[in-house]
Image (cartoon, each protein chain N blue to C red):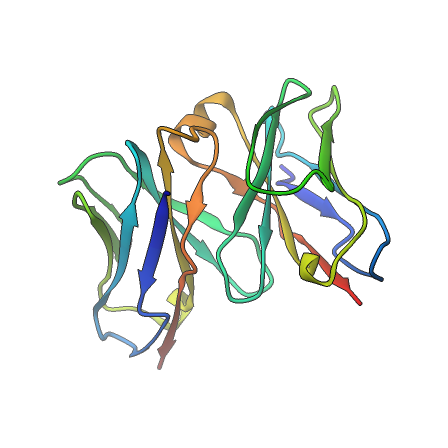
Length: 115
Length: 111
């Protein structure tokens, strides 16, 4: 059983560019959350998607947007990249019950470097 | 504002040397405190959920406890494979769907 898969694993962009990160949730999971983890810090909540809608959002600017598809996979888009956007972007999936218990299944992340 | 502080930032232990990691939190209406383990280059892996003061959970050499202001992750007779970053997170009533993480404790267990 494949767990949460994310792509790409590493990417390098320059300031002002746009990036799209992709996530396929664990089989049977319908909820996808995105987190940003800067070096040496804990993950920070960006937003969560359920039934193709953004259910909750953290303190991130509108440059960060997302989408969930009917097969529950998700994308994270970041526009007008800043140096400070360099981080590990983590996708986490869960079921409705898992969301309530806090048991999230994380992918290995996409490492974004902005030059 | 909901906040999580973990200490120490880093901890070095000899194999078999028991210790505890601390997680202090401030949250409006705790809806769960969570422990995750993160290995280098990997995403966090779920360990425990605690909901109320006095609750305890155990898994192999790990035991998590909860009070009204903090949680402890006790590691008994650790082995080198326990080396990882341990993350604590809380969920409050204001943001039911998001977890607020601390910066983690980097644990190194040497043979």
